[in-house]
Length: 465
Length: 167
Image (tube, rainbow over all chains, first blue to last red):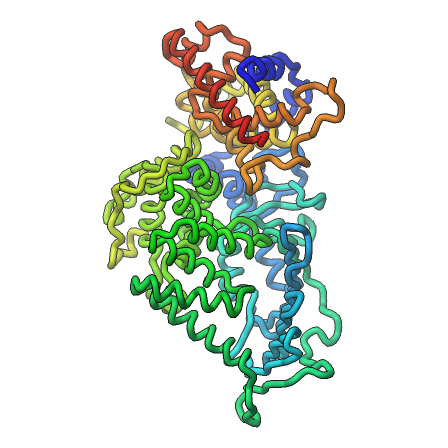
């Protein structure tokens, strides 16, 4: 396409009539917006909203609903105000979760049923990951079915538990505290929906406007019906061998494949420590072993293998491993920490335009996390292979997390807005606002490996949080 | 500035510029859904910057607000691969269909939304608002040669972006 073509198209776009409907919508929206300015209290809310440019529409809806003011930032398609709190309330009554994840081709990747107890914790669970893997927890025992081996391994549930998310209670609490509305009265695959941001879900979430319950998280669909009878029952199929590892069971000679599975777990942990200690050749060998033995579901082994190769200067291998993670997790939507890692690997290789394609996608998540440090948790997890072993009080504080994210942003943008972890809250508020302003008005990627980084505070005054 | 004063300016800006804003946003977005979303962002942008809109430079600020809103609306729409999906393009059904409904027009609009601020401003003024270079220069606070340079750079950037989008 040459210059003349482009100018011709632009000219055509510029001379087309603007439909009267557009002017009408604009007038009505602005009129309704003006009406919301009549009550002094709204000023306070709007000022608050403006501090967070990323989430202002969403925050507007949530806050305004919460104080029961009948204000909406008007979308003419909107018929009813929605607030996150409605979803939180609706989730309290949920006893069963039914999740089906699809891969990029629309094929079922896995199906899970979860029974939730009155305390909000998982009490029974079933996960069917075609073609070979099935897990059933009946509340006391966990059965891992290895269909390809015609075997079932039984564990005491206390020692072996499978989960969809680590802590459902924390997951829902994160929605209550940090969830925001992105768009009301939109649709998802033809179904009416509100689109919300749930930081811990790490994906776009769609909520049913009637039930207020989420029905899609990334490419995972959720429903809440009672499961068919027998869903959580451990049934041994005919011809399957049983290896019972529950306390008190008769000792039995176990096959080599099962021993290798155990050793893969053990080696995975060794690999994490090797990577954290900077022993990259050993870490690479161990992670390679783990993914060779257990390729499916080992997304963190793939990711840290990528990180290890990055540290070893093997950027092509690193990119390959990060791409694998993105592929494995494709049904959950974008994988921000992995896009960041792969973008860095491309940029370090000098493939700046390819890097930009990854980094530009992750930038909104990074900017958003400046206001919501929990959204940075997965970046921290990815950066530190020992994170999962840390007790909660040893994990990065909000201010440490923020400092680390500012450094990541500096590296991929070359921007420096003067954040100081020991500075005043007011100064740092200005720095965050400057990042948001920059993102709104430019948001361009510029790989800057020698960017000036701020020190990560070891002891943080929580008062400034 | 007092709240009542800000509200008063907002209402005045709304009365003076809403049709202009609608016209710019419609040409930038080309469909109702994006337009509505960009309009929401614009109204919030106007409220936020309302104190800057009480003078001669109001029109220039409105451009900036509209462009930022448009970029955000597009950013929300584009998929994981950074491109618009076929289903969202309103693909042309016949060759003589209006350009605003064509796949190419959608790609041009997306590419405009991704331009740096000054370049997209220049393109909107020059082509979408059909202004001459003197007017563009005035609003961009630069010389006429400077305005031509912004437009020229924008066209070159659009060519590159469109090539990438149509690959």
